[in-house]
Length: 259
Image (cartoon, rainbow, N blue to C red; front, side, top):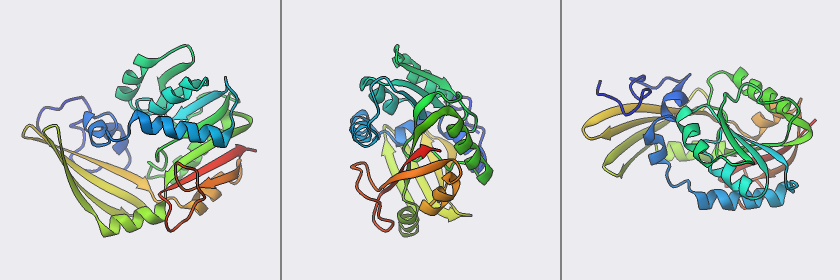
């Protein structure tokens, strides 16, 4: 196995379904492959979310699974007090460079509460849920969010539309991309109720293997998960906040209130 760009890159010879996110999200190749997710996109989404949620200036917001913090930064610019958390030490190290008096970042596992009865809103954006092979971990995450929110607080989940994604994977399971001298090749498949994306990266003659494993959670699945602790108030299908259509919408965005 070749020498790795960071400590995680050589830990996986194949797709580790349980811990895939530890290696992939901490690798520079993840951020390269998804570099189209830019600041302008984050700013536009935050403005639309603010119109929907009507949060007061100064509200405490938790950006759950924040990555390098592009949404957290956009929220802070709107006058909110923002905490961004992510399991990726590499991403949080980068995000911390932009910390301010109303913006902080820390490494944290979403399955554990960040605080108790503290935040006015918790945002979980860009399909940052359903990473686990254990369904119990989904419930643990919901419980942790519920604990972190003040009474009546808002939980917003932004997920892919599982129905549309499954059809897309079945129709187009393979792809390649060349960027900055790095070659990406991936295969997608549906396996045990999840989308599995196996990714081979070739960089300067060296090869690395990663994968993604994201559960195909539909609206009913989220309704069941949320039922005991949250009331779903709005269901949207894209970042313009148009109504959700199971056949055609790109996203499944749920605005919920803590019971």
